[in-house]
Length: 75
Image 1 (cartoon, helix red, strand yellow):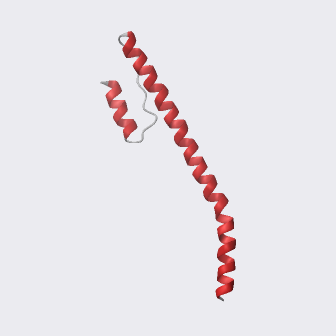
Image 2: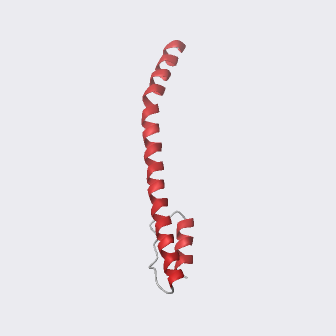
Image 3: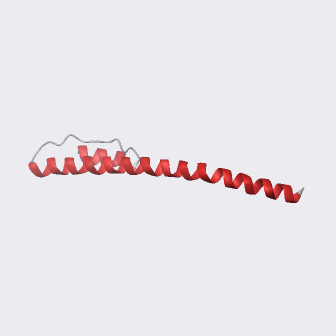
């Protein structure tokens, strides 16, 4: 039940969802694997956000220069 609740949270974008591994050995392994998966998803999401911010920042200056040239040509 805990894994199902946490999986629904992850499906909604909450990558901080974790479960406490307990129960039989297989259930504990499932909980540990789930926690590892959500940790990797959180790291990947953070990297994606940083990449998007970096690309946006790097493109802003060249696009501003091109825009300035176009505006000058139109004037």
